Image (cartoon, rainbow over all chains, first blue to last red; front, side, top):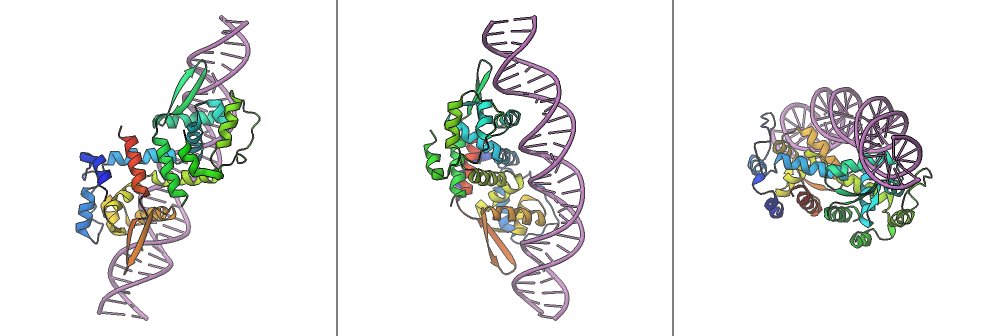
Length: 132
Length: 132
DNA sequence: TGAACATCTGAATATCTGATCATATGTCAA
DNA sequence: TTGACATATGATCAGATATTCAGATGTTCA
């Protein structure tokens, strides 16, 4: 079932993070208990959500997609996707914080590129879902 | 490079969607032009961003993760992740709109489950990035 | 050094989003 | 049909977010 994921999450699952709310009546107590024990750790949930949220903006999607072809500097990126350089810079910081892009400096120009191959894989998976 | 993605995007790329902004000075005109021509279509960008945005919320991540183990009804889900049933219902609608979950009715109880295997793959990819 | 340039940053603003509450819908069972 | 129950929905509001503008860094080159 979710063996693949469970392997990745491993020991980090944690059932304590979810507060007991006595006012909620569930129908299948046994199943709820079991699912709750397998529940992913709160920190991982947060990281995962933040990653996806970062990918969840048209400007950033375009930035990342543009960087799949070649490394580009800030003003090039601005020209490619048609927004101000300031806006690009702001969004690049967001992408940097999530370690989705990296950059190298050449003189006064910063060349941005994808940090790793994860983005392409994520986009690939996302497109598969979107396009069917 | 991005052959894999380009195959998927196919003919749907579109360079017209991005407005020409004459006030932006780019450094590498040739490269900008090329990247721009390969640029992903605006509609696909939007769909992709919306998909990721949907995945970019802790509550929804928990809902989807919970559903990886077994199908669950609304009140079970509420109990599992510790939020109100109303909140769960609202978020399930968001997930439904993105075709990430489906449901079947059994009497007055609605059993939700994952719509397909994409979520697990996306989570797997996301976790790979987050956990390194 | 100082002007020119590429990029970054902070504040302000308009928009969006998620949780909550109250209420509505729809189903079952008596 | 009526009441009980599971779920859905609409309005509201506080908090988050993206863009813009103005100004600050930091780098190059004369």
